[in-house]
Image (cartoon, rainbow, N blue to C red; front, side):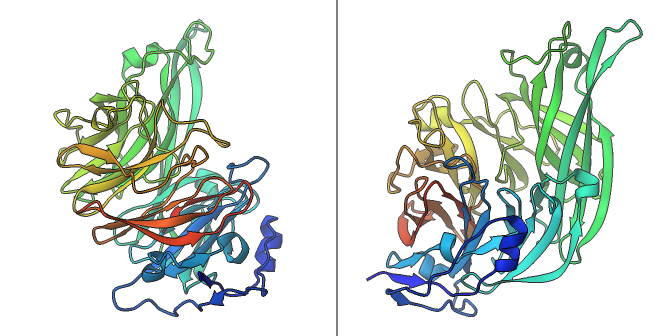
Length: 447
């Protein structure tokens, strides 16, 4: 018999605020286990994030719910949880942008879009659907808008950083196009005290040749600190217009991957570095795209004509172009696209990806997981995890690292699935708690 873990605290006030209605059933005929008040004996909280369907299956626009269990239960396949029915509704008009503390005891959220867009809140994790708001709220909307792209920096859960970019075409006195300006804004947030630390804006230029050809930075995301803590790396996406017409182009040469660097914590002195190994974007999407490991920052790229790379930025704040780790070559596939990834402290990483051979499912291309080694520059598909054409990872956000283990979720859109724990040292995979799904919805990770 499966053990159904639930508790029954209704959150109708929040539901009314964000227009998402859920209910908690008290007709549970399965054995109920109350969540432990506090994980002990080496366990930690594992918080599952669930994205409800809005208009279309897998769009995640119906709101986000979270539910926590301890890591022992997370690895127990006889446990079953129902985050969509019993979860805590995270304030956000669309899919919430979530982060967690390194020990799993705190969740951080900045609402995405709508009337509450840009509002920062944090919660103490207490098991099940119980997430108690702690500290004061603060809005970063005046600095980076109501749909901010933000991330928690790896500085002991002290700081969050959010970014935006705006673009404007520039012309000379004769009305001829000269360049597209990219003005970036960066705000850092004191997560503990809910205070704005710093805010700066900069016009960030590419080379004269690149700008004359119509290239510009069109999107930025995923700020990451270097090991010294004195530089902030920001991933960038490049777009291109036709200089003769200023119309957007879609078929153009993809330039070397680029990263914006700022002094930290001042957020001054912007510069741009370029990889000669990888080409394409470094801004990622919903999940952290770059991580510091062993003195360097390792960064995924996307939309590379040769398939995604893991790129390396060394302590000199330059790309290490002798480091060549291509996922197509490592996995023997074509068109690899890294959707999300996370390394453990041993340099072994779990990568969520799709490729040209992925089946087209109800919400997009089918996703897979691989176990990679940053030092050996190798990767292999994790075959112990089941795959389905409707297993969709484009919106995937979170992995939990607990020592050398990495936790993840697997469930096709609208179907039940499970938590899995990957022991990165050995590659052993443990099938854990069942995740009960609802029509058109999906799971976006663990925290």
